Length: 134
Image 1 (spheres, rainbow, N blue to C red):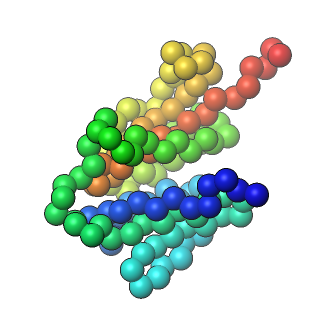
Image 2 (image 1 turned 60 degrees about the vertical axis):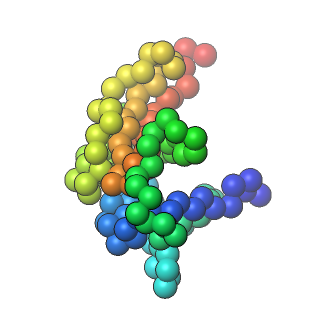
Image 3 (image 1 turned 90 degrees about the vertical axis):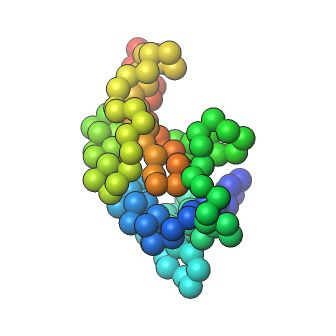
């Protein structure tokens, strides 16, 4: 049984958010479902990811570091997959926060990139394989 059933995000411009999220979510293997007022992506065994129009779209974008959303990390199978997803996201208009690189302060194997959409929503693509010597 899943602990997290779904994750919903409010966005200022739902059409633009669809444009930015759709290539990334599809590349991660999620199927898109459009409804009258929202869009969601689903993949077997994973929580549903939902974009909803903000009730106050003129409230400005989210600012990283303030109370609330920090970031969502997608663990993927390889460094090459981190690079591929990073390229897909930037091609869809995401802003680079940090290009793909190693983060030895986490582990000597932690490889990740960080991007933000027009709403200031930050996501991470990461790969942190288990130690091969254990």
